[in-house]
Length: 192
Image 1 (spheres, rainbow, N blue to C red):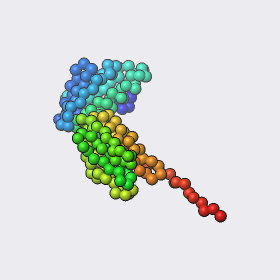
Image 2: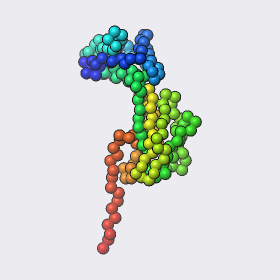
Image 3: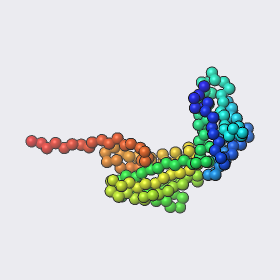
């Protein structure tokens, strides 16, 4: 039995769950999300105890064992998303690099001969704290937030992919909690 799948999901105040067939709809103060549940996994919504219990009827099947924990995590992400939301803090290092939001797009100037434009998904909000870098020490800071964890994570990965951090000077776009392993450049020895 999955250790994660066994844990019941607590339903916070103000969150409603509706299950019709294989479709699970979750609504809360931040918005509404829905997901198609796998038919092999059973989901019981207990309104009195304010929790959702995900069970696996066939514990000997490997595929269903894996789906048990996955379905529980996906449902938990829906509940957390509509009640609290998710956010990714990001940084841009590099002299002259900057970010701005224009007409539903994020415009990145990160050392290419042209600005890179990425359309912002409808459920994702961009909050720019520091729009431009100052030298190599003070990064540009921005936060991506939304209710759908998958959509938010994918957009953050797409933004990072524009200019991943390089190991020599550390220039590029990175997550705020990301550690970039630095390398030492070439050492020139004076010949004798």
